[in-house]
Image 1 (cartoon, rainbow, N blue to C red):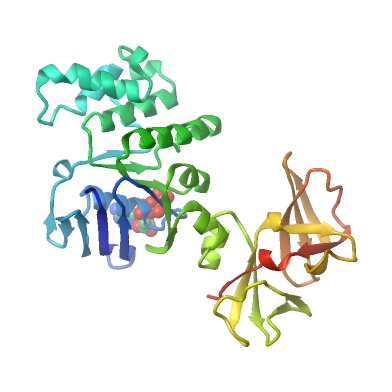
Image 2 (cartoon, rainbow, N blue to C red):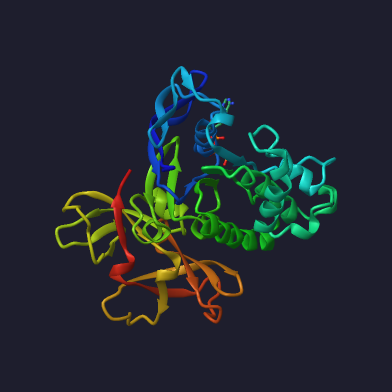
Length: 358
Ligand code: ATP
C-alpha cells in the first residue's frame, strides 16, 4: 500500500528559518492530496523532503512499512518508487518527445525490448502519441507539460509528486489541464502529493487538501469540508475568500463587532459569552436589500466605497461605519449601485461562520 506518512517533520534552513515545523500528515493510498498555501509556507520544502532531495532535521517519512527518511537516514530519491514533476517542465530540448519519455527509463531495470511499448503507452495516456517524433521546441507549453507527465508515468511510480505543475501555462490551458490531471488520476489511481498555491487547482485535482501556513498544516479535509467548514480565519480567507469581523460573543448569542454593530450567527460553535471570536462571511452570502431587511437575516447599513464589474458578478465594497470595518460582497451583475450610495446589507445567520480569534 502506497500510504505516505509524515511524522513530526521539521526542516530548518540556517538558524532562523524553520521552513517546515513539526508537520504530521498522511497521504492515503490512491488519493491526490494537495498542499495548498501562500508563497513561503513550506510546500515545496515538504515535497522535496518526501522526494528525498532534502533530509529532515526531525521527524520521519514512511511509505507503508518502509521508513524512507529520518535524521541521518535517507533512502536516495531513485530508490523511493516516486516520480516528481516540476513547474519548469525540464524536458530535454535536443531529444524528441519519445526520447524524452524513454529517458525516464534509462536508469531503471527495464528490458530494452520493452521500452518502445512502455513509451507508446505513456504517450497514449497523455494523448501525445501523434507527436512522438517532434522536438520540445515544436510543442506548446501544455504539450511540453504532457511530455514531462509521460516521462514521470513511464516508470510506473508508486507515488507521484507534483510541484506547481501547471503554473507556467496560460489561464485557459491551466484550467483544461486540471481536469486532464484528474482524468489521468482516475485512470491510474497513483497516490499523489500535489503542491499548489492555486485553490481552484487544488479543488479540481484533489481528494483532500492540506492547507499550510508557516511550515505547518492548518486544516486537512475534502475541498467541500475546507470551504464549507473552515477551521480558522486563515483558511476561510485563503480558500474562497471571506470577510473577517473580529468581535466578542455576548450572552444572547450575538457577536458584538464595533460601534453598535452585531451579528447573530446560527451556530456559535463551542464558544461562550465573553469569548473573543472572528466571524467569517463569504462575499456571495451578503445581499443588498431594502431598508426593511429580509426575514431573520442580520441587517447592517453602510456606504458603498468601491465597485468593480467582473461580468458574472459585481464586487462591491461597503464601509459599515466611518472608521469601522468594510465588507466585500459579490452582487449580481445588474445590482445597479455606485460609489457613495447608502445601502442596507442582509447577512443570514447561517452565513456567519464563528471561528477562534488569533
Ligand atoms: P512558493 O509557493 O513560493 O514556492 P513554498 O510554500 O513552496 O513557496 P518553500 O519553498 O518550501 O515555500 O519555502 C519555505 C521557506 O523556506 C521560505 O521562507 C523560503 O525562503 C525558505 N527556504 C526554502 N529553501 C531554502 C534554502 N535552500 N535556503 C534557505 N531558505 C530556504
